[in-house]
Length: 244
Image 1 (cartoon, one colour):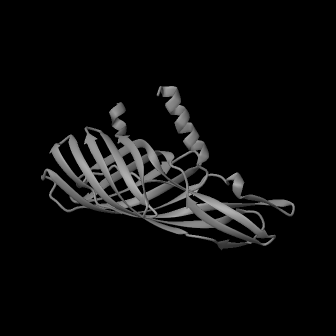
Image 2 (cartoon, helix red, strand yellow; image 1 turned 60 degrees about the vertical axis):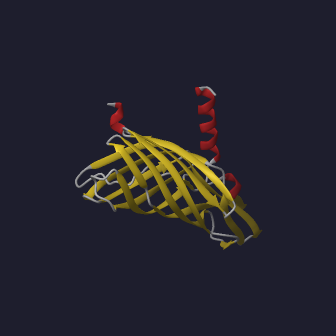
Image 3 (tube, one colour; image 1 turned 180 degrees about the horizontal axis):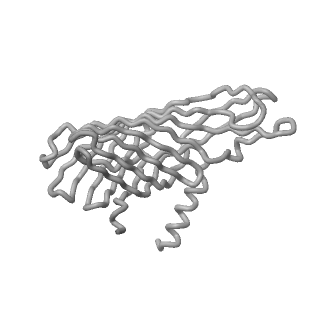
């Protein structure tokens, strides 16, 4: 597949994502950056989207629900700093053409920084929301139009475990747990009643394999959806100063 084909596939993914979408990769190893130090990463990867479905019952009542949609391609920027020798705090911004989101996290290292091994506990909280109202959730109402949107509360817990044969190389295994709660809301138009139909919350366990080579990090993540299907997500990040 040539560069033009790859860029076309990425553009299609961007266009079809009009609802809340979430980056499923984390690109972390089991060590912290150290007291007073700072780290930044930019990258691209795939993640999960949530699509909305709204049914008009009558003039004043709508049934709404959300479900998991297709994979989406993300651009992401993350930063973190060392609050202590074994505690980092940081955040991430991620976006597709139709959705954006943010996460905040703490990362606590359980092992000494001099060890060749790293294990860390990393709780995460965030939110994702669409940039615009998808056409399929627009309804004519009297002389105006009603639009609905879906936003997702993000609660995640990951435990990166890594082996560092050298300072510039690391191999990472990360058990993960995702909890996403979707909020369906009326964004424009006259006030109407919204009744949720179907699930609003989704729990998804997962695991990822990753590698750090100098300033580049690769990660592949498998997420269990509905207890039946394992869905893969991939991506990589680099430090911005690799360009300078």
